[in-house]
Length: 282
Image 1: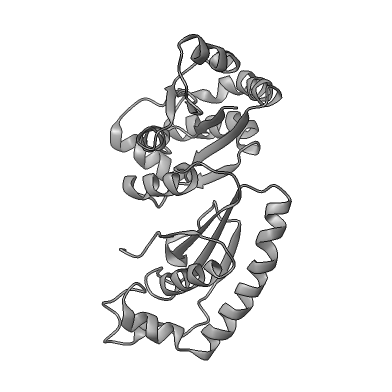
Image 2: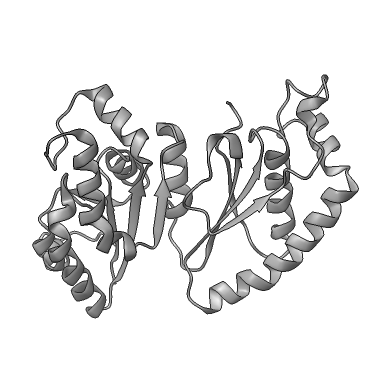
């Protein structure tokens, strides 16, 4: 059995960065391959004597017109007993516009303008987005953060549920790829304590302040109990990925401290989540 990962999504959302990260992690990466040939990759690798068990296929630029071909090819591979997953990269409209205006490159869809081309591509790619195992919002991620998120999700072999904890700030927007969002803005904010403001939730003084609140302890107890019930149920249903986002106002203090503590607590239940802090350096 070969494990296939189709990397799809909006032009400018980071497909090349994701592919490079996977290649560094040992995946065999095929870029811009015609979708009609996807079902023949297994045989081609065999003829070359290759022994790749993890293959990432990057949908080409302007891939909306390829969706009609790639979906049946994915079904063919699944029917042959292979595991096929889809990573879909997306970003808000204004972010994609800024990225294209910054590079001055022509959008592969063409059209009267960049905004119209992006809207057309989003519509064309909707069927593959609907099939995605993971939809990753790259709008607030820099290159290093995107690499880290991709490697946390797909960098290691193994089956089972991959759980991710992501801290964020509501002032910088919701992470669109989250399955569960926990709003922790009800907790006292270290930002308003002068001696704590320069630190983050990764620093012990802020951790002590946040975790020392009675409301925090009650909240974590209930969330831990909830997740101890939900995660085995998700596993039983065959879910492969679970992203839990914890948000405070700026994403620097409370959400960071709670994400780290929740990861520690989940470890008591045999769950080893990856932890990332989207806005801690803002």
